[in-house]
Image (tube, rainbow, N blue to C red):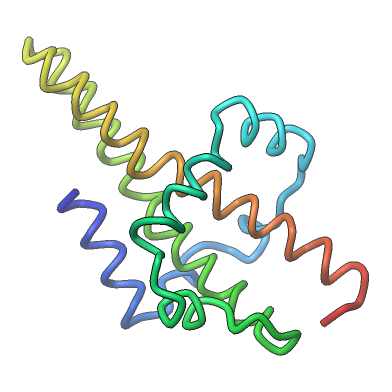
Length: 142
């Protein structure tokens, strides 16, 4: 969680999403993303987030104000969130595999499981947001 926190908090103060090319954030295979989203039950994860960590409506409005002019802000926040989970996802996977290899298998498995819940699910959720924003932009709504 500490590794994820470093990248997440950096995103609050710096434009960390710009460390990756804009092309990274474009969803090139939306059907594959939708399948992953559905197979892993990411919508249930989203509902859980909205009923716990994102319960506060004021906090949600900071992410998206619900208006047409808020799409750009939503897109930026989504990219920041995605970056804040992407790098930790890979780093923690490396740590988990390393722990498993050196014989601390229970801790390695636990680390990988927590990483899956704490970083994989948010990554897929943010990719899904990005896909939906792309659709809105293609329709010319913003």
